[in-house]
Structure formats: C-alpha cells, structure tokens
Length: 164
Image (cartoon, rainbow, N blue to C red; front, side):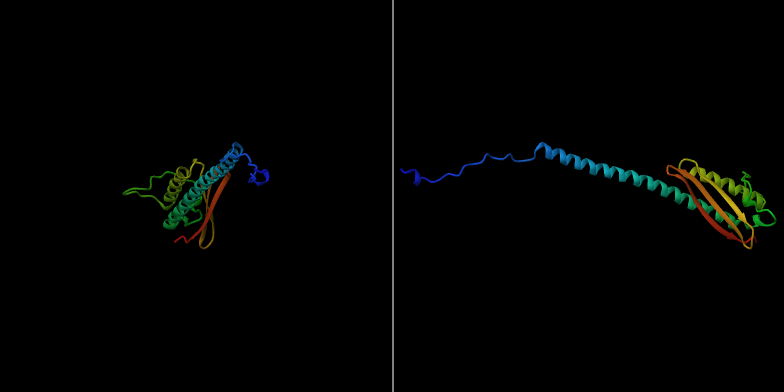
C-alpha cells in the first residue's frame, strides 16, 4: 500500500474536562454571599421601619385620644385658666358615683394619657404635652415626643374646641 492512499487522520486534541472548576465555584459562592448580605440588610431596614411606623401610629392614636377627652370636657376651659394646660394629677375621676370638677377631670385625663404614652410606645421614652392658645374657639396643640435609634421623633396635632 501506498502511504498516499491511506486516509489521513486528524490529530486529536486532548479531552477538556467537563463541569465546574474550583475558581468558578468560588466566584459563584462570592456572588451568592453578596446577594444574601443584601437581603439581610434589607430585612433589618424593614424591621426598623416597621417598628418606627408602629410608634408613629401609637402617637397618632393617643393624640386623638386626648383630643377626644378635651372635646368631651369643654367646661375645663372656662375662666382664665384652662385645666388642660396645667399639671397632670391622679384624681380618681373614673368609676361609678365619682364627683369631680371639670378641672379635676382634665388633670386626671392628662395623668392617664401620659401613663398610656409611656407604656404604648416602645422604650418608655414618650412624653406628651398640651399647649392651650386663647381665642374663640381655643386652640389646643398636642405634642407627642419619643426617642428611637435614629433620634427624637415628634407628632403634633392641633384641635379647636369651644368652651361651652
């Protein structure tokens, strides 16, 4: 046989390994770890935002509560002094057959409202004040303040209520 008549064989290349190499696995692991870290950070931010939203909701509800108490006890604003602008006191004005003046009821309302504030908002740092501005009708500015990790937060509400 003549060597020129034999079929030519193509030189074969060595077989390439199949599958993932160690470098590819490490790169995939790093990408996955960065993604999981991002998810964990977002989860922490959402927990903090949820907590802050709950505190704000409590502040709004309790400000509305004292506003309703002010509207229900309008006679506390008669005369030169408005009892809701004064000091809080536990006058035990709740229950059956209790006889309190409108000023005593206002001081009792403030006392119970401030206790609710300190218990309802996380951390017990909440405080509340009521500032009365004379006029016809009188204007009550209700300010609720509390402390969070990001700093001091406030909610302010104004209510007008006639004295009679």
